[in-house]
Length: 226
Image 1: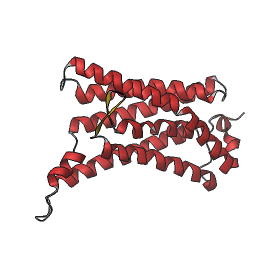
Image 2 (image 1 turned 135 degrees about the horizontal axis):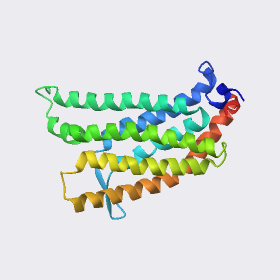
Image 3 (image 1 turned 30 degrees about the vertical axis):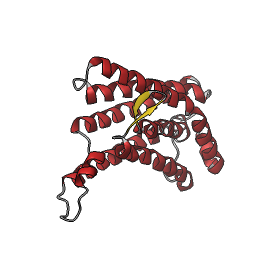
Image 4 (image 1 turned 90 degrees about the vertical axis):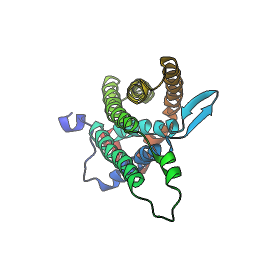
C-alpha cells in the first residue's frame, strides 16, 4: 500500500465527494456559532444546572469523528481550523455589536447585552478549550483507527470523545470559573457538566454510524479511501 493510500485522504479535486464534507462542515460550524448565542441561558435538567449550549456543543464531536473516518485526519483538522475562525469571528462580531452605540429609538440595548454578552474570560476559555480538545479528539480517533485497522468504529468514537470531553470540561471550567465561585460550587458544576457530556458522548455513536453510512451511500467514491 502506498503512503498516499495509507494516509486515507480523499482527493481535493473530487468535487462530488467534497459535497458530503461541506454538509458535515456546515453542521459543525452551526453548532459552534449557535453555542455562542445560547450559552448564556442556564437550564435545569434532571436536577442538574447546566448551560443550554452543552447540547449543541456536543454535536461538534461526532462531526469531527465522521470526517476523520470518511475523509481522513487532514480534512478533519481543516474543519476544526475553519470552525475556529467561525467561532472566533462570531464572538468578535457579537462583542462589536454590543459596543456599537444604539440608535436613539432602539431601547433594547440592555436586553441585547444581557443575552448575548459574555466576559472576555469565558470567551477565551471557550476558544482555548475548543482548539485543544478538537485537535486532540481527531488525534486520538486517528491513532485508534490505525490500531484497530479500520474496524470497531464505536470503540474509537467513544474513547476519543470521552477523553476529549473530559479535557474540554476541565480546560473550559478551569479558565472560565476558577476563582469566581467557591470550590464546592465549581466541583458541583464540573461534575454535572462532565456527567452530561459523557451521556451525550455515549449517545452520539449511532449518529456517527449513520453519518458514515450515508456519506458512503451518497458518494461511493469515498469507499476507495476507507
